[in-house]
Amino acid sequence: MWTVSFRERLRRKYLDVIAGVCDYSGSVGGWDKAAEYCEKAIYADEHAEEFYRRLMLCHLHSGRRAQAISVYQRCSKILFASFGLRPDEKTEAVYKEIMKAR
Image 1: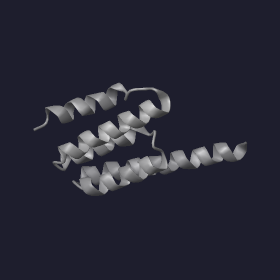
Image 2: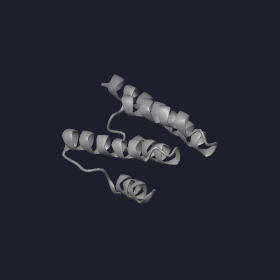
Image 3: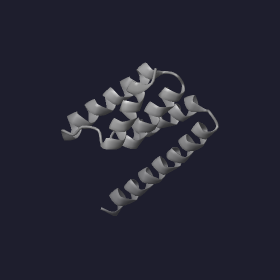
């Protein structure tokens, strides 16, 4: 049983590191690189909604609105299929920001 908690701690640490790299990449205008890291995080945990939000913003800042919308739809589909849930308020707020962008 201790291996499960150890594995979970490592997974969380990995995701925390990726979050830091995404933040840094975005802060210096490296939206494409940040998007790559978000995809890696989503691959590691397809339920990590924070990385869908980050990825949506990366695409929005890169001028790829359609891809940002696609990420929202993917997130919605996964959360509903897995838990019967809709994305949380933060994700919905990012989606509304994307829909307002032209």
